[in-house]
Image (cartoon, rainbow, N blue to C red; front, side):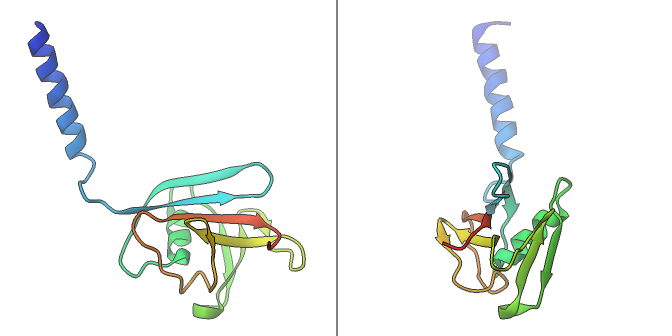
Length: 127
């Protein structure tokens, strides 16, 4: 096969790859930092209108390699109490979230996210 033919095959393969990636798909990224040097990252959770930080956690819970989630309350009073085997300690370390590097200032169940946001849940002491 000549050089031009290989180029054509390569270009065709690339265009097929681009089509398979759903153009315009909007996502958010979620990282769980367990505070002990280990993390779990979900690089492309599907974003939807009116989606909250808690909705993103629930999507990660449903992922084949997901997380285990415990919480109590609802709406503005919802509190995440455990992710996987790390449980809030009250006066010690607890689960806190950030969106795009800014610490959450309200319940994760009412904090809406935007496409492209980077969410971080970190187990540690409040700063």
